[in-house]
Length: 425
Image (tube, rainbow, N blue to C red; front, side, top):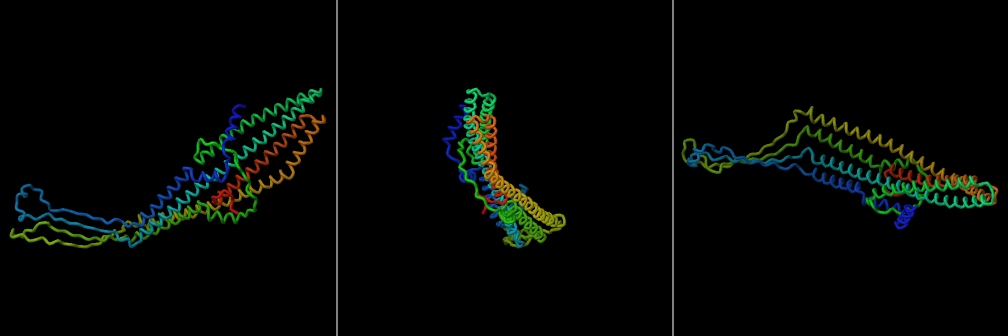
């Protein structure tokens, strides 16, 4: 009892929990979202890097340096000076490789963005389901408290009849046992609320924050067209965007493999000189060494093309076809998810209408009639107890149906790739 009162006091002090505020907190604070956003930033940097051409190559060599110490004492005019040569080369991207690499990098950016959206959709769906489970938990506690008050009134009436000499002792015991059962159910509900609060705090990255009562409003009803929703899913579902990006990357990879059959050439310029003078053949007067320059072109020969480039083409084409098949499989799965969510929503709305129009009014009338008969001495406490139990079950079913409908709406939004807290109109 003390723990229950303490939990109620802490709950009363906690601010109310709104669905829109919860989703905003999940979007801004959850580490998974931030990690996905950082992966997008990293992927964007890859696009800039891919557009940069290859670095030029520069080499410097010193040759014909004497290694015999005896020659070091000879006059410089009697020996040939060391040969100093330099060479510079740059790859000319005539095949457009940087452009193709940039296309592959842009596909990686699209995949990273799709991954970020998948993370946000998954977290939002989990947050919405947890929110409505918490709302259902609160409604179940409210219904149990009201049932406890009703049982207290029934017990008082049964005790009055028992005191007047009527044989109602077994009825009093049944009512008292029912009240104890409600206390047990309340303990279970409080434990479930603690679990749901921990889940919500984990989603919004606030481990020790108090979780107030949900401030909920039901989503208005509307007709749902499966084909229209599927068209929205094709445009908005991140898995399909990821498949399209994978196709783009594989096509660029295949183009790169085909173009590598004619590799990019490397243009080179060369220069060499001797810092000193060059003695003539008869050891006569030294002749000044004139610097020499040259130019050249280097082209790799694709002699292993059947085992490398052509294999790369086949591999890339297979990846592109695999991405197409993945997209088709995802479309089939998404269509089934939409159909299942719409069916759950429609069934929940039909069940809610049936409860509100027939089950709940009749059960409430039956309880009122049984309580009046008990007060008049025309009914037993067991009859009132049975009517009370029936009404409580119907009330619990009503709030359960409403929570299931909201959870199905969250699943529908996730199925079409929608990020708002309400289903797309």
